[in-house]
Image (cartoon, rainbow, N blue to C red):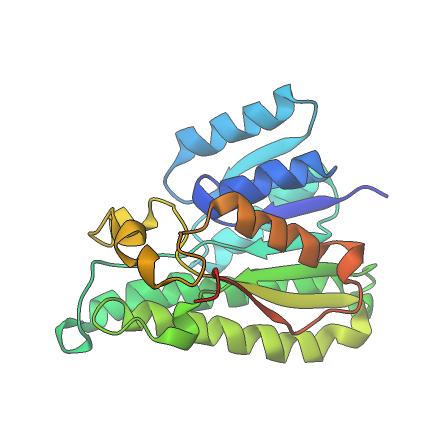
Length: 248
């Protein structure tokens, strides 16, 4: 049976690591990107040169029309989508809650909450036996911030990931009898460029001594957890929130 995965925010970091591992596991890979088209296209070429199938598609997951087009283009080129990884997410520069304005909240919540909802909806409409589908799996990329709160840094980001956790649990229960499993990973301090976007490129190194494992994680370690949740080895796992945070 052919397997097609769609990864939002797939051009870098955890998304790119997941795309590479999924291709190695036999998936045809839809790589969604918002702005970083060069990196996404390069990743698609890398997968193709290695004997896999991949397609890079620009779409803004905040926009309903873009999400519909994204799913349509991936299916037309790669076949029926059997797995979705809701990875696209943003954070803004470190700030306290009393320094955050409504425009920032809209930017963060639109991408980190509305985006996963819209993508999950389109996935369910294709995978669910209720709609004539043959099942599938969704993994949402949450964060340990949803539990820890990110005080003094990114409470808005943490709150958005709390919403992702709730989406995971609620949707899992809605579609469990329709052949779809829905789970989430909660990465901790992972060495990706997202920290630089928040204004502190060395954040992982600064906080590493407070992690029980005494180090930050790698994107590939999160990708391995995602692929396990998508796999048949996790066939009785749904509604799970899997911490990938070195004990933090």
